[in-house]
Length: 326
Image (cartoon, rainbow, N blue to C red; front, side):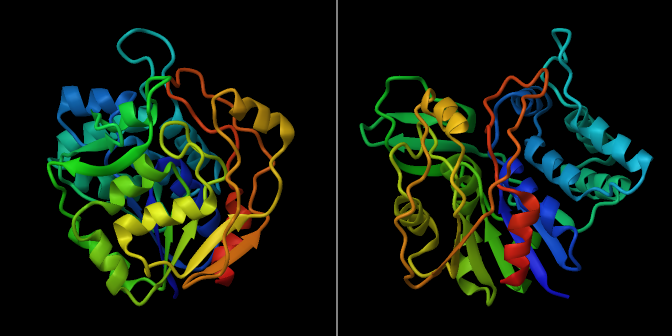
């Protein structure tokens, strides 16, 4: 059975997982642990735990959904409280994993138990269990600590990022390293370049594993630029930035959406200073794979969600078909 490993944050990686779980493959999600916004801020600051939101989204993506009870459980895990002061913005799934951590004594054990309860197809691993914060250093010398502040920056600032790193330095979770080494295909992204993707790639040991594995390494290019992270970035700029953190010959394939994004969506993004990523790639040491992998659905915000979310996303089924052919 072919082994596919997906590396990234919650939303982008969950889209990939939702499609891939329908195929007879050995699937593993390796999830970034840098998030510190929204309910994750409460989990980190008040409970002293690592963030759970990205892992929760991957659980929902990989959970069984064949029967009514499984569907209800998936909906429950995604439910976000939108009333009251103490619980507003929190998800049931995050609180569920906090409770399991307290019961079983560790977050890694809580992940295993949640996997059993949701009967997920595949495995979910944290990329690290080191409690670190993402740090961005901008070209003007300014330093910002915290994934949330980097992800949703103040307006009208010089927002060109020079580099990011984790403080203190994180060590890769050993099972995550082994999964990369044993894989046939490693999928990086899609997701916010610095806060969802590179926040995991800077974990000590990940770069080395990606360069050592015999697996093909594929990067799913983002659909839109991200204000404060990739403003003005072309497709090639995304690749060059990735190469700073994983090396200049690590990628084997880059997947690019070939379907034009609807004008209505583009106008909404433009008001937030975000634009369609210009495809200026040519085959290099990696192969460029262009395909219609755009979802036709516009994402609607869930009540109680206080964070900024994408309006459009990749189509999980279309993306999975391309990846499985690879």
